[in-house]
Image (tube, rainbow, N blue to C red; front, top):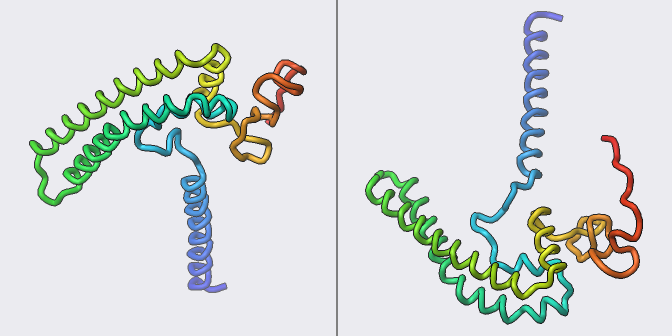
Length: 180
C-alpha cells in the first residue's frame, strides 16, 4: 500500500468516526426530553390531570375561570419575552431598551406567579387529601401517568389504577428492584 492510499484510508476512517460521534450527539440531543418543554409554566390544570373524568368535570368551572384570569397575563409574559429576545438579537444593541424590556418581563412574571400561586391554593382547597396527594405525585413525576405502552393514562407507572379497586397500589408488594 503506497503513502497516498494510506492517507486516504486514514482520512476515510477519521471521517467515519466523526460521523458516528456526530450522529450519536445528534440522536441524544433530539431524543432527550428537557425538564420542561414549555418556556413558561402551564396553567393549574396539571393538578387535576390524574383525577377521574367525573371529578375533572366537577372542577372544570374553577379551571375555566382560572384560564380566563391568567390568559392575559401569560400573553403579556410571552410578549415581554419576545421583546427581550428581539432586543438581544438586534443589530443595533440598545442596553437601555434591553434593561427596560427585562424589567417589564420581571414585572409580568411576578404578577403571573402571584396569580398562579393564588389559583393553585384555591384549587387545592377544593381537593380531598388523596386528590392533593395525587397532584403532588404528578409534580414529582413531572408529567401525567403513562400506561405500559408509554401512552398517557390514568394508570400508575406499572399500568395499575392509581387508587382504589383491584390491583391498586398496596394490594400486593412492589416488584423487586432490577439491576441495570
